Image (cartoon, rainbow, N blue to C red; front, side, top):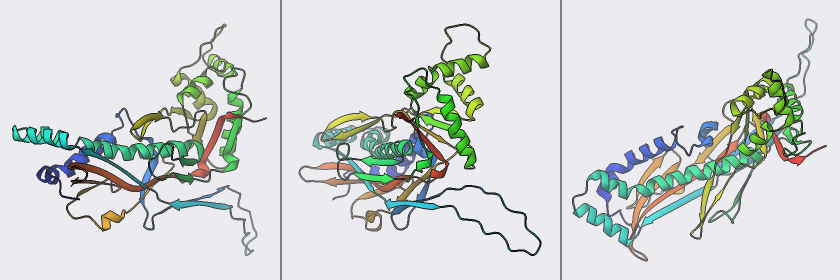
Length: 360
């Protein structure tokens, strides 16, 4: 590795460019919003491992006792643990000889710093965004199912598996398919809400995909409850829209629906495809606020930087580097690497209903 051929611009602008990029990526008005940035809190891991502890968290009553008597000893809730190593992610892009020559010509013709920076650092946004995209993919898959399974089919390198230990007692199905308009969804939801209250939790949000929300809105029971609440009389009851459905859900169960319809683009062997990491038909009911951690560890290259390489640490997580190679031909590289995984820690506050599983 050699120092970037454009080191004067890299040294001057790389820190500021990465700040602007992350500010834009974290903007909640960004069309490609990141739910993991909202629902996970970053946490540094010294030993390079992630871990989540969970327990039943069931409240029991104290006892009245006589004066000077022994204090009654209660049974401690059962506790479980899920853990694993923090995987490494990486991505790099390059400027080939033709692109480098074009950049040289731009400089020779008196291009402004803004023009030069725009060309030199356009790959920087892509590699940082690539890290955000992978974390979003893993988080949405894990949040909707309790597990993350990255296979070789969608990944260049090593597949990984994370199991967050979702509680079996917090997993539900449905009595009928959502495509059956006679299914009484709100009867099933009532059981989930009552169970959460027994556990000492208050469900406030239900995350699911838009297709599932639309199917719930078109159920006969939903239409009838909505019509009753609106004093609607007559046939051809319309399906409520999202705002109206949320008003009904708030009244019936104390929660509102949040649609999750994120698409992630993957590339392998120069071929691209799109996937939706949220499991279709999965509804995750949970309390308000954060549900876990974005656990990260230090990279080996942070402790052993390579001479000639320019580095910038982004969000304390993503290490961006710029350098030059002359094999097999001269090229300018931009690379991102990180050791980071999303971890769902509040599993005792999460209730998952898989509407694709029919239960008696």
